[in-house]
Image (cartoon, rainbow, N blue to C red; front, side, top):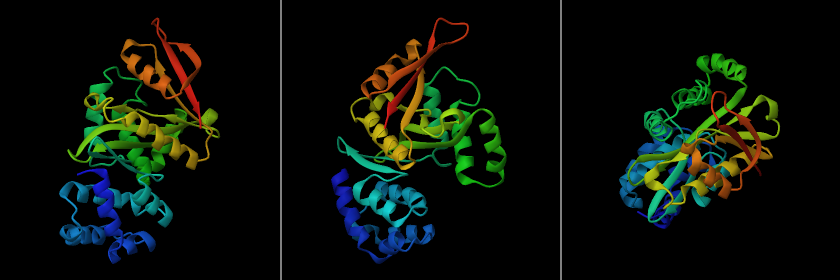
Amino acid sequence: MTYDQFKEKLQSAINYPFFREFIHSGNTDINNFNDNLDQFRQKIGFDEAEIKLLKRLGKTMAKLSRNEKLKGLINGLCSEFMIFGAKGKIFSIEPLSQENLAEAIELANRVFTREKNNIERASVAFPASLIISQGGFKAFFLKPIMYFYGRSDLNYWIIMDNDRQKVVGFTGLYCLKEDKHEADWGGWTCVDENYRPYYGLAWKIKEFIIAKIKSRGKKYLRLFTSTHPGEATANVVYDRLGFKIFKRSPIKGTNLEMLYREKKI
């Protein structure tokens, strides 16, 4: 399937009553929405991968306003997800979920072989972001712990190859106490090495994250890397994306430096 073909089918689907109701009335009955997708699948012409994509995004869309739903479905970009095509494939940037958590952590462990401190390790940060997004008892106790470490508003998204139903990247945002009023910080971000640079996913991540930050009223996107040889490629990418180094600090016990970068939005 191609993105243009998918969009054409989507325009047809939006004309069906169940789809209009889901978008316009704020209907949050996901099971009913999914049942109708299955029922009208052949009539609309969706294939299995397209149905899975819409069912995953349905959970996210149910929480959004009518305008945000339409932006995401018609324009391919809204505050919580992005759908786009590249080289004949359909990709989506969508919220990290329990269903793709293990795959995202496995990718992080494969790409980032050097563990950072405990609060930033992907196997800690990813589940923590899910707990916070879901709210409830666990989030009530976790938020003060995050704040103790100077962090809040932790969110992660995955990049999905919808043809292969495979997580091929991820990105995240969080806030630091000292500059929360003006900046969001980039969390763990990567693209599977088999997908670089052929599909231009880094640029799409940038586009999505900048739109997200603008919707939150922030002025800067900040992040950090280091001079470690393993981050040489990342530093080249961030240079090309316009992230300027505004601070350096030595890493204790090494001859390496932390590089703090920012991009004005």
